[in-house]
Image (cartoon, rainbow, N blue to C red; front, side, top):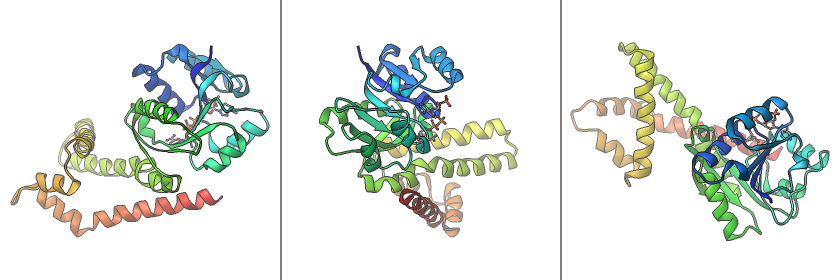
Amino acid sequence: MKAKIGFIGAGRMAGAMIGGLIAKNVYSKDEIIACAPSEATRNRMTQKYGIRMFEKAADMDDQAEIIVLAIKPKYIGSLFTDEGVRVGKDQLLISIAAGVKIETLRSYAPEARIVRVMPNHCCMVLEGAAGYVMSEGCTAEDKKNVETVLSAIGLAAEVRECDLDAVTGICGSSPAYLYIAAHALIEAGMKYGLTEEQATVLAGQSLVGAGKMILESGMKTEELVDGVCSPGGTTIEGVKVLRDEHLEDTMIRCVDACVKRSIEMGKN
Ligand SMILES: NC(=O)c1ccc[n+]([C@@H]2O[C@H](COP(=O)([O-])OP(=O)(O)OC[C@H]3O[C@@H](n4cnc5c(N)ncnc54)[C@H](OP(=O)(O)O)[C@@H]3O)[C@@H](O)[C@H]2O)c1
């Protein structure tokens, strides 16, 4: 019997997805297969998740209903041309490979129904954010399956392929920008006498909480800022500094630079 889902590649991203799928009971370990060339990776995956592992992608490519392409983009060409991997018309191909366009994927797997996903690395703690693109020929059931898979590792939004550079800017790369903000908060906390451990817990949880407020309060970010800034209070003094230093413009320029690079890389 076919597995529900098979991963080509079993590195950080595939591991996170497999962990999420099992933890959230989307699929059982018997319904998941994966492959990786190195024995060490195969042993690690078998021990950690109890899934069936293969050495070669070509030995498992027809053994799962959904195939997730989770290897580095530079190896994808040879996977299909040299290793002879085939993804057929009865299979859904979900690619998480950064920058690899649907047109390119279709040239390798012309019959498959293709979905391109841009996730971010927070999926390793099952709090990822991902943009996904359903290509022509995908069915409503495919979409449901993609949403189910992605919901195991966080939240996802369907976008157009032309939006993926923007998705890279505000979700693929943005954890790094937020880590810089967290680093500054931790340094500031230590400057005022907190230990690194205390400052890390407090700054990290503040980012988690702020994210949840954005998603769950139903309030716009401007309202959230106003809600914390009582006149004559402490927060407003800090906010004044951020506004004087044009933090929002800096963040937008940061995303501009990232999106520009993503567009350049997409042309190559
Ligand atoms: N990391 C991120 O934050 C992030 C975010 C968005 C998208 N992505 C995308 O996710 C994909 C995977 O990234 P990653 O960070 O998980 O990479 P990774 O940790 O380096 O894992 C890559 C995996 O691919 C396996 N592999 C290499 N060649 C293979 C082949 N010919 N057949 C089968 N498996 C093969 C490797 O096997 P061995 O273990 O045996 O070497 C390894 O398990 C990439 O395309 C990347 O662009 C990553």
